[in-house]
Each structure stands twice: as structure tokens, then as C-alpha cells.
Amino acid sequence: DTDKFWLLSYYEAYTLLSGNATTSSDTDREWGNNYWLRSPSSSYSNSAYSVYPSGTLGSNTVSYHKDAVRAAFKFSI
Image 1 (cartoon, one colour):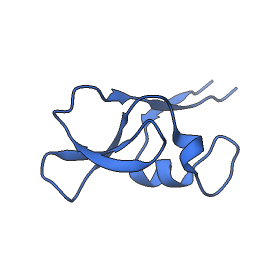
Image 2: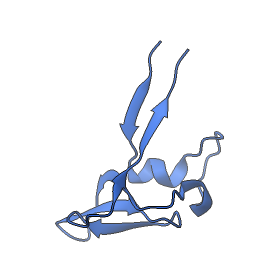
Image 3: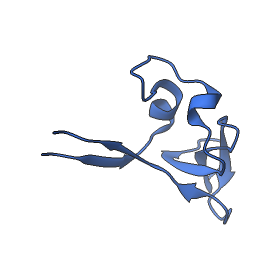
Image 4: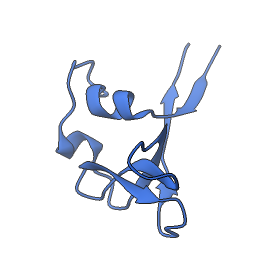
């Protein structure tokens, strides 16, 4: 068995769904809290992309203390 664990990039969060669809929607990304993506934001030097509780993508300063990390998993049996 090989399980994989990683943080989503901006591209992965924008395009991937658990149901193998090719595009993502805000509803599919929502989680009830901000969570960080691994991609840095190009708009500010101390920002990273994140997903807001509503599922929309944006960027926050990295010092914002309420963000969490939501990892992606892929299980192989």
C-alpha cells in the first residue's frame, strides 16, 4: 500500500474535486475555516494563497493566525 499526503497548490485547489471532475467550484472547496495552500501569492512578499470558509480562493499575509492546513490524501490499496 502507498498512501500519499500533500498540501494542495493553487492549481490543484482550483481544478480538482473528489469526484474526478475537471473543474472545482467554491462549494467543493469550502471547509468552515480558512486553510493555506502551498503556493505563494505573487501579489505580496509575505502572502500565500488560501481558501476562505466560503470556498473562494484568495491570499492572506502569512502572519494571519486563524488559518489552518487542510491536506489532501490519496489512498492506494
